Image 1 (cartoon, one colour):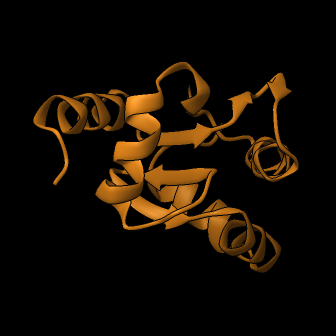
Image 2 (cartoon, rainbow, N blue to C red):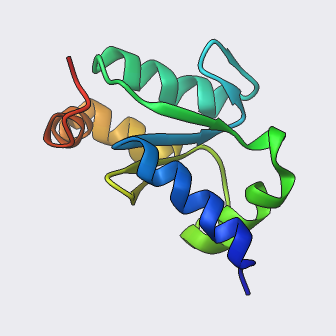
Image 3 (cartoon, rainbow, N blue to C red):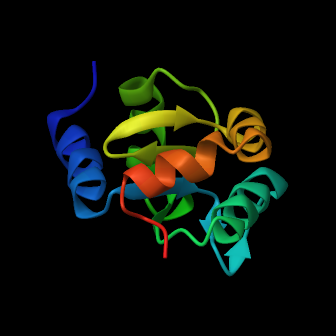
Length: 109
């Protein structure tokens, strides 16, 4: 069962921005290729987003897997809802769905 303190930290991150990327590393220094690809897709959409480096909080890294029912990173949330990981997000980017979701969230320039 997900620890209440971890749940609160996750929900606090999600409440802080309409678009939140839980990733390995940071947008300027991603620490895995999948995180780098998602950052590139978000930047190509001119999206503003908050990032959370999961390596800085191991408890959150494990808890988020349970919270989202998604076992891998990165994980992109738009308006508090999980859109998916790298494969899904790249597919959405290619089809234009990602840009639409980001525009609807008010996260694009």
